[in-house]
Length: 57
Image 1 (cartoon, one colour):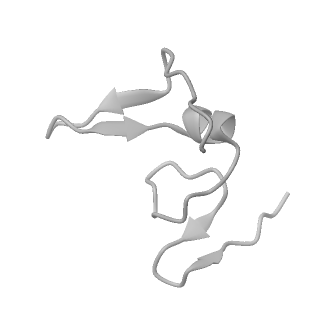
Image 2: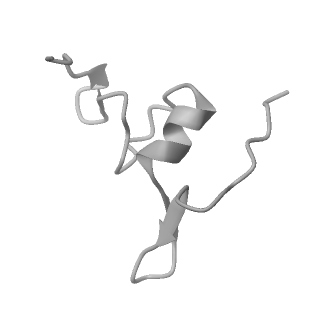
């Protein structure tokens, strides 16, 4: 069973089409990458190549 993450202010915004778009803040709270190609993925997943981008400091 997946853990339910409470949605707080700053976790998402509404797109012009009316969809909820989750921010990096929410993804980091969730704690893992879902590999769905999220717009604000902080984990660097590239849906086209199904791989993670190298993080450079």
